[in-house]
Image (cartoon, rainbow, N blue to C red; front, side):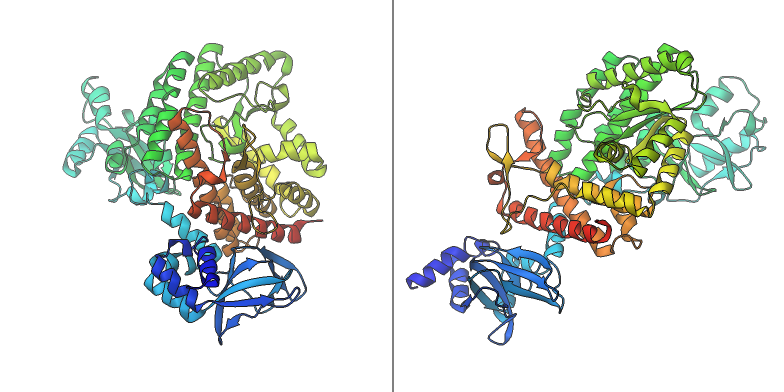
Length: 618
């Protein structure tokens, strides 16, 4: 090879995906490369030797523009574009134009196809378009689909393997016992006219019938558990396990609307989980002091480390951590009521932010509040709820959930008010969306009920969504707020770094990676009156409406997965090393694979931000 060919080989071989080629293949490829010089403001031809071409920028810069001159993306040294490499399918009215005098290395499509056929690494990278490439990267990392950790993805309805066995309330205890023995089941559903009235378990037969000396000819209505706890067929299995742990039950009736669909038992999950997290939640609900809860919570970091070692995704781990956080809050509220007595008026304990979205991490702090019934009287009832808030928030802090730096907690009287007070506050935030209103609103637009009177939380969410849906002025301000955090990509798709703890350059994967997607999803949800809080659920719901294209929802979901998983792996390494957990990642600690696909993820976010700005921006 001459000096020029060596220089081409060294440059191309240092950039993805060709850095994965063996030397002999790289040398052969270089022989097929054509060098093209494109003058500033000239359009780049899409073909080479009469074929579609793949181009790599050697020096200079190239922009993708529409016929109207709108800039879609900008590419710099080492970036690929053209055949099989575009971030999205390039429309007929889109054109690549040299921003400055530019040198390109070009490969005709026949050579690219041959490389893909002979080298799976190249095929994997170039086969889909950029958003699809990121989707393949997500699948590449998500190797837990057959893992027992996938309880978060399993519907209860998918666990039901038989039609429900049931009797009417007037049937006798003896009939129930005989049918349970015949069907080899440990519980009997008590149903009349298709409606679930109660349940009778084998434990009930022992304690309520045999031990109590009740006549076996008595009606089931005398010994059954009336109005048992139930779950929907769409409830995920992990949430169902937490419900069973909280209520200390081993049988959970499953309903499909008004229809009784069946019953699941603890044993139905055994083959599907290694979930020490379930046992941890069960332990939480058995504790009777803050000290013992704090002892239990100390096991959470090790649980997260175990999940990471088992290959769990960030999303699944967040579901587990959120479930544990829910269990801690609920048990602390139960203990508070035991200590303080019955509450003087109905209330709802709600969480906000990442906890509400089901995206809690081991590094998350508290965001919580109280909604009080409108019968609340501050003089009469104020001390009770102030003490409840202090008990719970201090207890959570002892259990490893730091207090909120912005004091967004129920201990702050501002976040402890009546339903009508909350409705008035939301109305003010929506009608007067100044920076302070948007700051508070964005926290509480993501709210979820945890404990107490669920109707209070539901009423507040319903009234909020009625006011935000289609409210163009409010959505315009919310969009402006969402666009303040831009993905950290520079002029030529290079990373823009911030300073870490030791002044080294880092990427803040939370604030410039995950959070922009969270904010995009929030705008789409509030615009469409979508009653989802979880970010992925919001994207999926918006993608099924006119608020967001299905491809846009899918692309943002993939970007969220890759960014979250990269952040989670970073935090897992910190846990393993015993250092403080954060989201600040130095690019040099990432593989080429991770760095390249982070750029893909950031590019998708930037594209979707521009789309949102065009729709709702002022």
